[in-house]
Image (cartoon, rainbow, N blue to C red):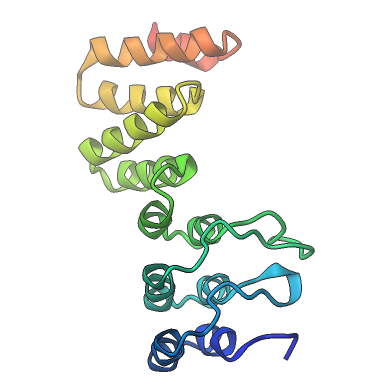
Length: 173
C-alpha cells in the first residue's frame, strides 16, 4: 500500500521478528515510499524504538529526508526521533545533533539533574558555540548551583551574542 515494501509494513506495524527476518534476508533498508519515508522513518513515526535501533544497526541510511508531506519534509530519522521526545535515540543515531542535546538538557533541568543538563548544554555549545539560549539556560543552572562566576560568564557570553536580551542583563546583574 502506498508503494510500501514488506519491510516498511513490518517496521510500521511493530513486528520486530519480521523486520529482523527481512534484514537477515537482504531486504532493501533504504527504499522509500510515499512522501520519501523509509522503513526506519516509519518505525519512528509509529513509535517502535527497538525496530529503529535494529534498522540502524543493520545499516539503514539515517540521512534520508522525508519529502512532500507536512511535518516530514526535510526531516531525518533523528529529527523524527527528537520530535517524539526520544532525544537519547536521536543522539545515538546522530551524535552531532545539536537540538537533541539541548532538548535533553532541558529535560534534565526540569528533573533537577543539573550536572547532566550542564553536560548536554556544554556538548551543544561545543557543536554550535553561538547558541544563545544554551548559554542562558546553563547560566541559570550555574546560578541555582551557586556557581556564580560560571553563571556570570555564561550570561555575559549570551549578551555578547545577542545584546538585546534585557532579561539576561537583569539576571546577570
